[in-house]
Image (cartoon, rainbow, N blue to C red; front, side):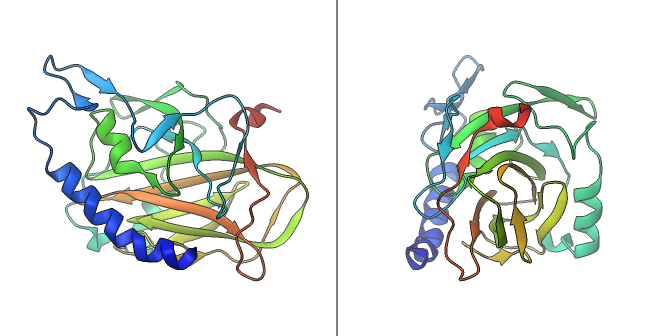
Length: 246
């Protein structure tokens, strides 16, 4: 299955480019602005709204339920600026209060600069989380942006020596339970298992993952899962955003 994902990703990316770059302002589909100028917030076909029930990871271990913050403006002309030093400064900047500690609820809002941004609890319909479509569906800025993502993973037992495995377009940084786990630097396309963390421990019960994805021109998306010592996906995990309150 891993080989299939890697083969399909370039095809999926090309189809997404064709689909969205071909959209015109006069088009009145299920997403974007209607003829009256109002935002149509349908997330289909890439997302559905998250439910209150726990959601298991998919058959390949990918985490598909996330709280996504509407994009933060980052005026970036080219992704060639994404050096390690630039990214660490960008990812560790506090854009809103309690950025590295709070687990938001669906509909919560934060103020970044002069803009109020909302959190959305969503289930991705595929293994990858399509941030470009997320922004497009809400008529938000799609290029020159930084996205924040949060999820709560529940483990049936303590698991040692696991690794957080990530692919993203473009650069990103990921934290597990408040500690930096992995950073993907440079201008890159999303590839499954592109970068993996050092050995980590998943706590029994809830584990909080935070991620930040930055991009200038182009598409934005990511995929995240845990793998074991043998590089195999861990599939007995679930996501329940309500668990953050316990």
